[in-house]
Amino acid sequence: MPLPAQMDAARRRGNVMRANGIDAELFDRAGVMRRIPYLDYSQNARFPIHGAIYQGRTGTARHDAVAWGYARGADRHCVDLIQQCEVVGYIWDKDRIVGVETTRGPIRAKKVALAVAGHTGHLAAKAGLRLPVETHVLQAFVTEPLKPLVDSVISFGAAQFYISQSDKGGLVLGGDLDGFNSYTQRGGLPIVEQTLHSTKALMPSLSRLRLLRHWAGVMDMSMDGSPIIGKMPFEGLWLKGGWCYGGFKATPASSYCFAWTIAKDEPHPDNSEFKLEGFERGYQIDEKGVGPQPNAH
Ligand SMILES: Cc1cc2nc3c(=O)[nH]c(=O)nc-3n(C[C@H](O)[C@H](O)[C@H](O)COP(=O)(O)OP(=O)(O)OC[C@H]3O[C@@H](n4cnc5c(N)ncnc54)[C@H](O)[C@@H]3O)c2cc1C
Image (cartoon, rainbow, N blue to C red; front, side, top):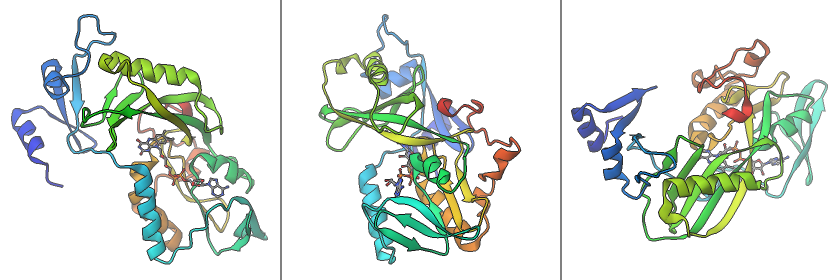
C-alpha cells in the first residue's frame, strides 16, 4: 500500500518507525505539542509528556453503522438474519452437530458457526466444551457534544485509555477491562473513575464536561490475546472467537478467512495458526508478550 504524503515527509525526516510492517512516526515533546496542543504540558502534569508515536493512516468507524452495513450486505446475498432468536442448545446426530435449538424453534444446518464474542465460553459449554477463554467486561463512555477538537484517536500509556471524537461531537472515551469475569454488561465504578481520571490528567480542559452515557460489552478474552478461528473437536461446529477487545477492526479479514475455513473444511493460510488445538500443547501466539493472563491483554 503506498504511504500517504505525510508519511513520505516523515520518512524524509528520518523519523518513521516500523514494527510488524506498520508505519509509525516518533514525535518528541515539541512534535506532540504541535500536533495536539490541548494536552497537559504544564510543570505539574500528573503524567509528563515526553513524546508520542503517531500513526497517520488510522481512523475510526461508527460501529453500529458498520454493523448495519454488514447486515444489509448479508441480506443482499440471501442470508436470513433472524433477530430476537437465542441459541439455547445444539441438535446432535450421534457425535455430529446438525443444527441449533433456539427460543424460536430448531434450525437444522449442515454446518454451524459460533461467533458470539463474550458468550463464546457459555455457548461452547452447551456443546460440552471448556474453551481457553474468559468473559470480561469493557466499558466505553460518551460526553456531551463539543465543537470539533480531537481529530485522531489519542491513547495514553500510563493507563489503558483512549479518546476520540464522534461525528456528533461527543468525546468517546474508553479504559481498561473491569478486571474480573462477568457477563453483566454493566460497568463497575472503579473503571469509570480511572477513565475519567485519565481524561482529566491528559486534557484538564475537559474536567467540567459531563458524561452523557456509558455502557459495557462482554469480551471473550483468550489466554494469549489471539483469536481462535477454526473447527471444534467434533464435526459440524466452527468457532470464531477469543477476539478480546480487537474484534471490530479484524472483522472483514477474519470473517473472510472464517468463511473460507468453513466452506473448504480447512484453514485459510492467514488463520492456520489461530487454532484451538494449539492450547492443548501450550502453544501460544503471544503477540503482546504479556503471558497467559486473559485480563492483561
Ligand atoms: C466498549 C468496547 C469497546 C471496543 N472497542 C474496540 C475497538 O476500538 N476496536 C476493536 O477492534 N474492537 C473493539 N471492541 C471489541 C469488538 O466490539 C468485538 O471484538 C467484536 O464486536 C466481536 O465481534 P463478534 O462478531 O465476534 O461478536 P459481537 O459483535 O459481540 O456479536 C455477537 C452476537 O452474538 C449474539 N449472541 C450471543 N449469544 C447468543 C445466543 N445464545 N444466541 C444467539 N445470538 C447470540 C450477540 O447478541 C451479538 O449480537 C470493543 C468492545 C467494547 C465492548
